[in-house]
Image (cartoon, rainbow, N blue to C red; front, side, top):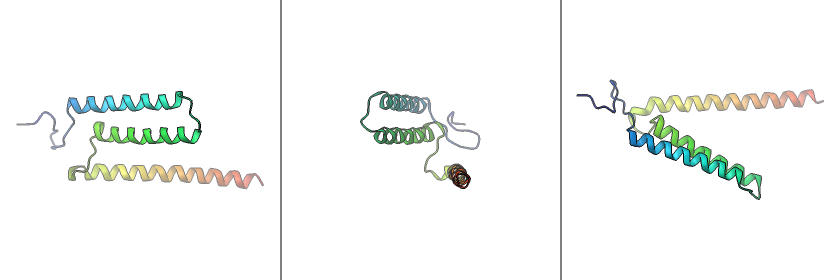
Length: 109
């Protein structure tokens, strides 16, 4: 007999309650982010730090509750693909910024 929360390959999917928890957490984090931006803050650096921290937590909530990425051995390939993708995008962004900065520097002589 098949469990309703597993696919034919045996991968576990979230339950309705885990999706609801993830949704509520995502909404709360979004509202907190808007709250940080809408309230007057003494320093822009503090606002940026708060938004960055809330964004990181929201990414982790999405990865855990919606993409079902965890530390189990069944998730090893998914985690490796995710890490490769993040590394590739980071290299692409850093390289682009480096090239644009270098081009601007060379053309302003």
